Image (cartoon, rainbow over the protein chains, first blue to last red):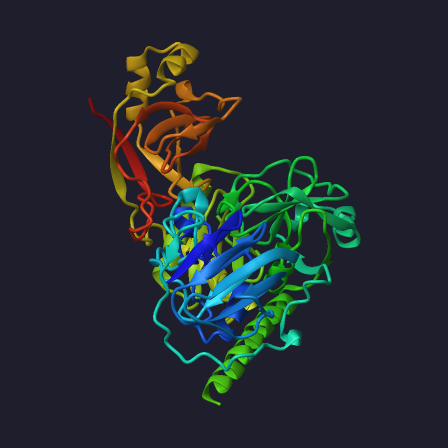
Length: 316
Length: 218
């Protein structure tokens, strides 16, 4: 069990998304930076899909009611465990009564806290993730608040030794601001000038950004249609609204929509975009689909490598 | 009808969108719905989700275990084979949804259409609707096609909250709000039928291509 002693403004239980219910209109949802949560899970000896806490918008603290290996990933922050500094993606042992605190998030947007065993909330439609608009999933279908006590599952495998950490070169290049993307399903509606604009401009993440999408501010992208009959979208799809400004869809975006999609962010780079704060910029680099899919496979094998090293550390 | 026109596009790393046509017609939508059922029945390895829409069918897949080229080829072939054999796909389900016609906009719809309230209700219950697609929020099914005399533009200002179970109309479509959400459609009634339940599998009551009849209850 962990008790939330001081909740940050945003705290939610998340894991992987719902991958089989889009035909019922259910968005995939899940961690906005899935790589960060999966890496933190690997570092505490969890399955990559264990539920953790997605933490944003400020500081807070959590008390452990049982001994537990923990790790943090994603956004960087001043984090401590009963006064000791907690390093990113590093196996850290919490004892009963220890308090984990975040003073302030320094870079990025979403920090993930993984606890050995994972947070034990019911699996709904193949995921434990919180879907706020539908008020289901996660912890009672809502944000986690101060005073909530979250059950942890029994640990299924031995966590790595204290201090185990995953190599920095296995992590996404969060600081680069370069995001790869493939051409979207309405490429014929955009002319060369729109493609040039998209790939040669800097776009600034707008303050109007949430779990459904990030508005991007920069040069407008001209297209030959306003809206189209609705069709499926996906997280990372860059749709262009009537004013020519792009919106990058995020985890909780509706499953279908009518704006033309000029491009789709490579899944391997979605964490980089998801972690950009309002006011920060991104640059898009268009790549072919086979290159994008190779990058995703590489990301998966990086996670497998972290998992393998963690297992060895646990045995050693 | 030649089917060489089916075109595949990647929708990111883990989905293929198969475009069936450029003009929205009920005939085209019917073809896409039966293609969706055929893809489902074919149980293609690594397919995770099948999302039919007005002009295109999108299939989500596990891209760690297959490639775009492979998946696009299998899907095009499956869709072409299906459209050559009409009526091969499983039949859609028919649903009857009981409605109490006492919505806040019923009077307004009556005066805007110059039809009596009784006539509005009679025309809403007279048609067998097709589920075009699901979207907006979980379980929200867009149903077509509303009687032309009942077709009104949606509200200029959406309501911040429409209660789950509200039966509403807008444009050529009708729908039941599955969850409490903001909404800009005209509310003419309500139902106790649960349109969406995350504890159910599948969670939505209606599936694209299904047929719906509304029945008046007191």
